[in-house]
Length: 422
Image (cartoon, rainbow, N blue to C red; front, side, top):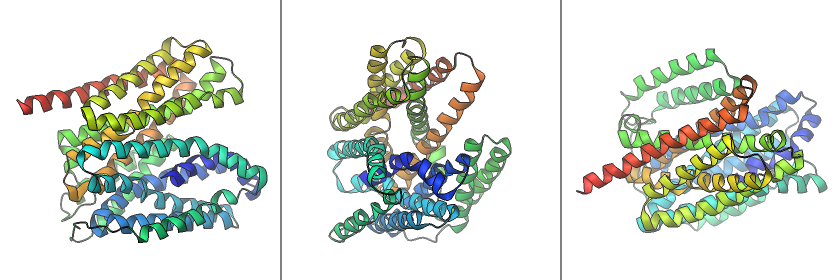
């Protein structure tokens, strides 16, 4: 998890070096991140599904192996096309790491300890995300940019050796593989993600067509790669939408904070970059505390608190933050909320609403919707930055509105549960 999180931020400092090495335009260089995001989104639900079929341990090992192969290919690629293929292979491998970890915790930890274990994932991911740009800058200071990828290989080998000692018993699904569903799901995700990234109405229409064909095919499949019940049952659909909003709130906040610091508070580029640190630290702490509280007071109440924090933070950023001290306090509160809404509570709630045999697949779709939200958030923010004069107010008010809606959805979970108990 730490290695995957580190890789999300470690490439940023090397982007200019990569552009110069391959002699490409900056617009092409951005595809170093875009291709990774696209294939990571595709990989998550597929790897989750296959983990229920051939075993979490095997998929995890495949994910680590693909990640190291992709890292090697990206480091040694003689041209930019092969470099992008390496990044795509890396992303597919990462898709076999993140959801599988949460599914493994669900299967091996007793319910009263799952929140704490999932909270540790948030801490590790937070540390990796914070250290990514720092480690990347350190490597570039003393070595060539290729070592940003080569460093992954010995770590991957060490993880695979450790994995040999892990024994696992798992009830596997034994049904025909849904090849048609896999192809249609891949086309749907790629088209939708590209339509958001490129702001293309044509691709949106094509994506909707693929989605229609996917639903039609999955209704007939014996073991569908997309369980339609996730989108027809009230509880699972609500959790997927909550994951979408959590990704939107997280990405739109984090991506815009440096620009907010420069534009509204008059900070320098270096100061505005460092200014995000309180959010990252509070998010990491909240992930651990949120996980512990899930075991004590329940996931519903913790998630309700998380969205309440993001609501306060978003309203403050939209209307009240005009000086640095208020900015630091606000992003600390916002970070605390983000650490909770993307952490343990949603995973725990999803696990309670699906069978043990479907855990990997269900967590995969939860991660997919969060990834879609993370792509949609900055894209919408970018459009609004160019349309509205008082740009940040409208952007953060949208995050506030989504937080209110999320609070209402989580509250409905809580009241429904109380009525059931009565």
